[in-house]
Amino acid sequence: MANEITIKNKKARHEFFLMQEITAGIQLTGTEIKSIRAGKASIADAYCSFSGEELFVRAMHIAEYTYGTHYNHEPKRDRKLLLTKRELKKLKIKVNERGFTIIPVVLFINENGLAKLTIALAKGKHAYDKRETLKQQDIKREIDRGKQE
Image (cartoon, rainbow, N blue to C red; front, side, top):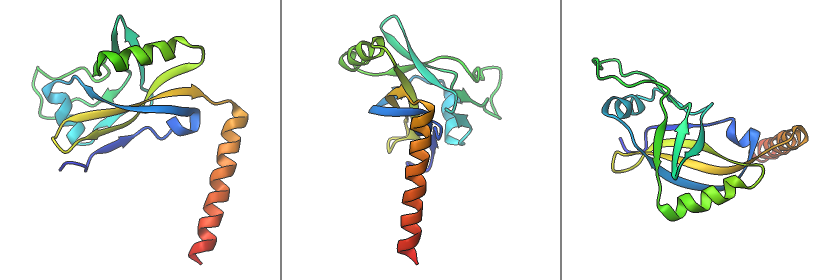
């Protein structure tokens, strides 16, 4: 069951230059982890921001657990990320610089059965950067097709 669940933010690499990636734990409730294990989560519109000295992931959608009772969770609530103080301090310094943001890239279940979120320090791309990335992907795809034939 360990590496079966991997939820990716496919827009992240298209919209941003990813500078540095860090794996963080997430503070979840019981019904949230059950929904993630069922694959009912989305990090497409999610982003991370600081509240005081703590880092939270916002707008991450985890669907309500089907068999949950009145203890079910709110789907788009803010969830605290579990990082060391040193990592938080480094990230906060970078985010205060102009143009940097923190975005979630991958949500997965590790070998111990815990939900982990890979976050990235990112810088936004301009339209011409996005076009260049698409050109590079097309060239790579054509080269790969040529090798297969």
